[in-house]
Structure formats: structure tokens, C-alpha cells
Image 1 (cartoon, protein in one colour):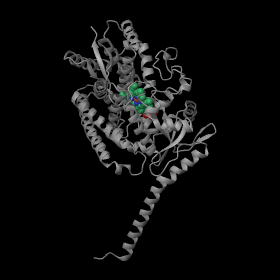
Image 2 (cartoon, protein in one colour; image 1 turned 135 degrees about the vertical axis):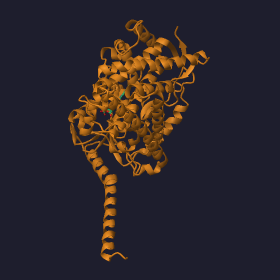
Image 3 (cartoon, protein in one colour; image 1 turned 45 degrees about the horizontal axis):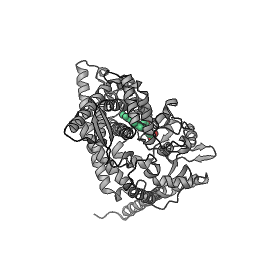
Image 4 (tube, helix red, strand yellow; image 1 turned 90 degrees about the horizontal axis):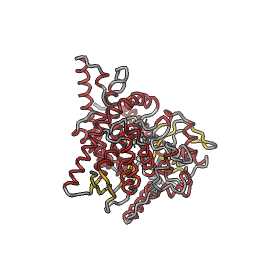
Length: 525
Ligand code: HEM
């Protein structure tokens, strides 16, 4: 039966209108809106390198990085003056445009900030939960973080933060200490076997990463070794895949250009979700079974996942999907950052044996013959300075990103709603104007008189754990783990840099040694 002409015409008209609306929406979001934000920023005197459509400044960024990579491959000395090597494009643009400038990732304009005073005024003008996260990263990193706390904003962020914060109470952290000691000792026993078998050189990067992965799997989710390992390997692979496609973040339809990587990241993300889902469902079942035989939820709460399953009033406030996303978020945020702080510290201590000796002496005085635990390591003050100095020269979090949810006034400048913000911590940590002539030297003693800011001329110039309400939730856990692992290594081994070590820090979501960290070990009797 033929359809009536008026019906066919109406459908055609509806389709035509929908098509035009979709095209208008695309033009608006890819062209009109970003240009409106850009023009407002320029009217306020903020400038930057000229972008081109549709890559923005990405072409230049990739070219600068490739040039740097070939220069680094012939470099044999270790220098801590790394800023222009890690982000050569920013170093170049800072020379011509100053510490605050606009650059484009595809069709997304970003305001890059490395001026702590500008940042201070900006941060004091907004409430913690009225900062957003750039939409472009929320989409790009969905496979990795889902809608976990790192990507949330507004009331949802506050709700998750309130549920999760109690998990990091001193009592809970204390309970995690013995698990950390056990996992670290397993790693060190493995090192002893390697040395006894005749090889003194150990590739430390992968060892530390695997151990911190195991620690987070056990302490946060009560996972067994095999499941922890599975999640850990999938997350690592996903990071490599995402980094490969990351270069086109912000470019319209970039998922089509990097379709293979996009599908691979999605597949890995789905597999990790399925693993966590099984763990969560089993936990819920065992909690229910426990409740039936009279074991209260409070008695069952041991790790982060247990605590997320029930808030203090024993009600579940996060849905199962939200729990899965938080598990992924904490797994990634928890192992990579702490591992890198330890890895760069080992590289630095291998270069500066006088500091290794000072730390060993401190361990002797503070811990002596006691078993290392979550309480006695807090007396290790010099180790705290070493951690701060390592995080200054080689920060695990190189930058932080935000999206402005309402217009912000900074002096005469108005930053319009919708602006993407790129806070460049690496640049501030290596800023001679803030740290003086010793900026690129390893000097933990700068934290002796000023343990928080290390004598930096601006209080906002050194923020290794972030700023304001979104400051790192796992800070105390990270410090505890760092001190436990480092204390155990220093009491069992002395070490130096392998002649094969190539100093090649690279920005791959975090700051990592591109060519690993081979160290030569000697057991201490
Ligand atoms: C040396 C180790 C660590 C460093 C340097 C570090 C650094 C940071 C920084 C700079 C931020 C703020 C990011 C931003 O403002 O966008 C942050 C946030 C966060 N960190 Fe850490 N972190 C470390 C360890 C950990 C650990 C061990 C965990 C969990 C077990 C963790 C979980 C988180 C989470 C969930 C957030 C997001 C908080 C929010 O948005 O409310 N971090 N971290």
C-alpha cells in the first residue's frame, strides 16, 4: 500500500530539519562557541600561538616533541633541567607569550597557566565544586576513568567525595600498612634471588609499578594477586593505547582517525568493568550473607571498596555502575602516581649517595630495630623532604585541567564561562624566578625550613597534590606507601645508576622514564 503523499512530505521535511539542526549544532560547538571564548580571551589581552583548523596547535606540538625525541636519543648526561625537553612547545610559547597564554587542542581553546599569582587569584574567585573538568577529556578518557571522581563535578563530585573521604582516615590507613610491608618484602626477596643468581642489574621501573599495583589492589579492593594483576595489565595497556591517540584530542571526530586505538581502549575498559563488576557483586553477596549470620557491616569494612559499599549509616549511596568507575579511577590514580614518585626518587638517590646515607642514618635513629609500620615511618622527616624535592623536579602529576563554569575575574582580566584551563605544575616547579638559581638542582634541604612550599616565592608555586577542594584524596596514603617502600629498600640494598640508564623523562599522562630505570644493586648485610 502506497503511503499518502502528505505523510511522505512531512517525513522528508522532518528529516531535512533534523539534518540542518545537527549541522548547526556541529558548526556551533566546533566553530562558533570556541571562537566566542577565544575572542573574549583575546579582548582581555590574552594571546598565544596562531591556531589552524581543525588541528589547532597540535601539528606544532607533535613536531616539537619529535625534534626533542631525536635530540634526547643522543644525550648521555643526566640533567634535571627537563621542562623544555618534556614539553618543548610550551617552553617555546612561554618565551614569546609569557606564563599565561592561549593554545588550541584541535578546536578547543585552552588557557595555559604557569603564573602562581594568577592561579591564586583565580582559585580564590571560585568555589571548589564550581570548577568543572574539560568535556574533551571526559570523552577522551572515558574508558580509563568512566564517571569516577576525577571526572565528576558539582553535586555529583561532592557526593562521591563525601562517601570516599572516610576511607582514608588514619585508622584505615594504619590497617593498610602491614599489607604494604608484605608486598614490598616480596618484591625485595625477588630482587635478592635475582642478585644471588648472578645479575646485579634490575629494571626497577617495572618492578615498582607492579608492586604498587599489587598494593592498591589489595589495600583498596581486597583483590587477590591474579585479579589485581589482570586489571593492572589491562590499565597499563590502555594507557599506552590512549597515549597514542591522545595526540589528536580536541580534533573533531578524532575517534575515526584513531579508530583502532579507540576500539582497543574501549575493549580494555569494558573488560576491566566486567572484572570489577564481578568483584563488587561477590562483595555484596558476602556482605548480605554476613548480615544474615549477624556480622555487622561495620565489622566487614576493611578496604576502600567495602567502605564505598556502605556509608557511615550503612546505606549504599553509590550505584553499582558508579562503584565500578570509582574502582577504575582509584586503581589508576593510586598506583601510577606513587610508583613514579618512588621511581624518580630511586634515580635521584642513586645519583646523590650522600642523601642515601642521610636517609639510612635517619631510619636507624627513628625506626632502629622496630618493624616498619604505618606509625613509625611518620618520624622520617628527611625522607619527607626527599619526597617533596623528587615531586618538585619530577612531579607525578605534571598538570591539572579545569573548565570554568562561570565567568571569573582575575584583576582586569575576565575568563569567560566555558574556558578550558591547563595548570602547568611542571613549569612552576622549574621556574627560576620562583626557586632561584638552584632551581634545577636536587636539594631536599630546601624543605627543612619550609616543609610545605620548600621556600618557593609563591604559595601556589608548589602544589604537587593539587589545589583547593579537589586536592588529592589519596595524599596521606601515598606518603605512607612511599615511606614504607623506600625504608625497606634502603635497609636491604645499596644501589647506583646502571651505565645503561638513559635519562629520558616523557609526559604520558604522568611523567615517566621513557627508557626505564636500570639500577645496579648490592645487598646490605
Ligand atoms: C605521589 C602520589 C600522588 C600524587 C603526586 C598525586 C597528585 C594528585 C593531584 C595533583 C591531584 C589533583 C588533580 C586535579 O586537580 O585535577 C590528585 C587528585 C586525586 N588523587 Fe592523587 N596523587 C597521588 C597519589 C594518589 C593515591 C595513592 C590515590 C588513591 C589511592 C589518589 C587519588 C586521587 C583522586 C581520586 C584524585 C581526584 C580528587 C578529586 O577530583 O576530588 N592519588 N592527585
